[in-house]
Amino acid sequence: MSTAVRHVHFIAIGGTGMGSLAGLLKARGWKVTGSDSGLYPPMSTALETWKIPVCEGFSPDNFRVDGRALPDLFVIGNAVRKDNPEAVAAMDSGVPYRSFSDALYELAMADKHSVVVSGTHGKTTTTNLIAYLLEATGRDPSLLVGGISRDFEGSFREGKGEHFVVEGDEYDTAFFDKTPKFLHYHPQTLILTSVEFDHADIYRDLDHVKSAFRELVARVPEGGTIVAAWGHDDVRDVVYGAPCRILRYALEPCEGTSWRAANVEAREDGTVFDLIVEGEPPLRVRTPFHGDFNVENTLAALATVAALGVPLEEAVAALPRALGVKRRQEERGEEGGVLVIDDFAHHPTAVRGSIGALRARHPERRLVAIFEPRTNTSRRRIFQDDYARAFDGADRVLVQEVPDEPIYSATGEVTELFSSAELCDALSARGIRADALSDVDAIVDCALSESQSGDLLLVMSNGGFGGIWEKLLAGLRGR
Image (cartoon, rainbow, N blue to C red; front, side, top):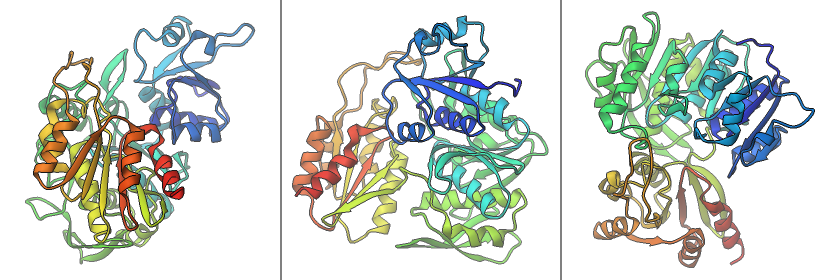
């Protein structure tokens, strides 16, 4: 694609990847416009800050106005359906169009060393941490991450260095391209953090998910590198037979692992551990993040930047200054001694990891877990039993009720739905008091009526959750 493109219009601009690419192009001085429905922070706030005009709703009128030139390029997000009137008009206009993934690669990555972070969990944190360590050690990388980086005060960075670090999602690309997004980024260095069943709207089962990751692994060139979480059986399975160098990391010793952590200790200011690298003397490391899963993410980032030529001592020295990503154990505020924390966790593995991390960080606080089953996967019955075990460590659980209506997706109509009430019954049987409530206001009222100084309210959702964080903090201030 010609770099002479100067006006790009994004259809469904509010997705984290779409909005980030829009911001990157705007920063280059390009004209950027977009449209979406149901925008919410942090991306809505970021787009406003970047002064990118966004039309509410989808219509050809958003770009087809009398006397106004058409855009030079349309970028169509994967949230857009094939009957979207704006997308249909864009594709009929004769103007070139691209999926987000192809536009990102062609406009921003093609002349860089592609560092792709993939996996069911930990992608956003690990992507940001790799870019932070490269920048902190003078490598001036480019970045696009599926969240708002606190280290870079945004979700993208365009550097002059040779590396482009990107979050590689296994979700499909667009309604006109059903291949996984991460296949479009042509990784030269690939990080694989985990492989579990997710995205039930496009994947039938775990084997189907693994087939996508196997194709990704097979595309890494012989001269490339894979950094793999070797403590996970399904990661080892999909990496088997890879054509390139493999760096293996794990929390626990396992055969073939060359990077691992030992003597892990949770502290108020983060986690410390001994970094054991084959052939090197141990290094005492402090990461500012909490939880075993973040120790794994830190191992992945350190192994990656070392593979890219960063001296390990420099990376370890820079690590404690990392800030991380918004909505990952983010403290939204504290009122009346009650701490409100926002976390993106929604898969049962992530829920369990976040609760465990905060339990270790704040052992003295009563931990109230507030959960929205919002995703296509979490609203299905498939993880019903897994969620019952995921909340161990919480003292109190409040769950939003799931609407009793079928789910329609590429894998067919689903009527076997997750039950919030059944989850609460299972948690009660495990000794955890739990209630399913109808809406956000009911959850807020319940939390406010029960909370006391010293409590921790952990809100877990991958969406806007009706602005629950602000409602909780406002209610606590008003008591």
